Image 1 (cartoon, rainbow, N blue to C red):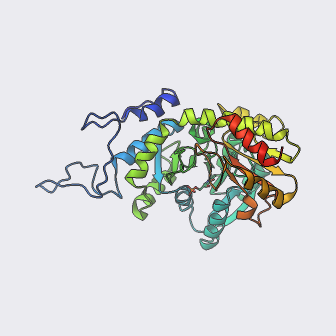
Image 2: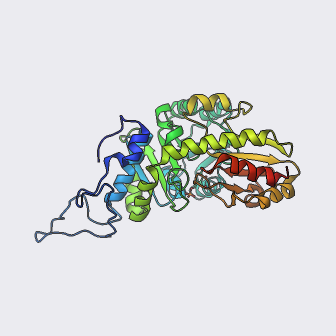
Image 3: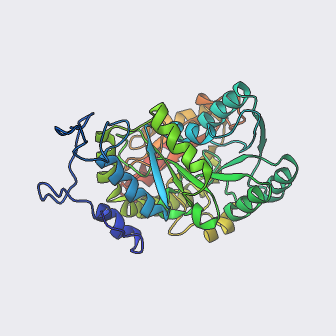
Length: 382
Ligand code: PLP
């Protein structure tokens, strides 16, 4: 491995931060599957840094190094899913602590954090964090131990001012965790804006091929107590990712900058196309000048606005489901960030959370944009 962090993301990603198989001379790192490692006749480990797979794995370290360098982080830790990464961050909050969470973010996070805080007698407040004043005011009075924001948010595509949120959380004596899944490390670098920890569901754009479940936490300063707590908890509680998943991640990330460029370009074209369709009531995409968070997204993101967008079809749930049902190229499936385009009717999944009945969430892939537009045009009945 080499420290490539001063090189550009496309170079770090394509060369997997310099990882090769030093034993065979292969240009791709090996996939060691052993769960335990040998000791010599003197009972000393042959490799002191490799004892047992729950503790150490060469290929997991490779994937974490690539992620840390892409994110501009001091360190990164992989988890077996995005939710496992979020849970690891929240488990550092002491019983009786205070958590501030952005409202209307990914439903899986909202549900788990609510249950967790109730169980641990942690006081929880939820706030529309794209309203910077509301977020800052609540930080001043509530003084959260940990604040979580998700930007761009899923599926509302709201944009939160990361720098302002970090300042407010710090002034209150807390830390700021940013779920940056929809942006990936390519389009947004929350740590450089003052966030303490950045989290991704690596299941999404980071892997990009809809065949790995993974999560990552990356930190700005390894001296922070919270990072040591997370490391110890991952080690002791065993929320570790398997070697094959890590190896697939290393492979997938080689094309991450390339994929994000194409996906973000396609997503913008899809958003502009949908905005012109009479059957579409609203398009939620920060790349559109009409979006409330457009200016902020332009200043705190770089290279595009991501592959995720939502639109509201006129006529409610029936009309939206009909459009989804007529799509041929967009797979009807949950998730996002893969090379293939997906469509999801979120109201079916989370009916009681205020999601508009006509909302369709699209994850735009790398297919030819004209084919995608034709698919959408046909599905809308034009
Ligand atoms: N955060 C966001 C923004 C997500 O969209 C998701 C999953 O959809 C998660 C976290 C959870 O990640 P995972 O499914 O890898 O556990």
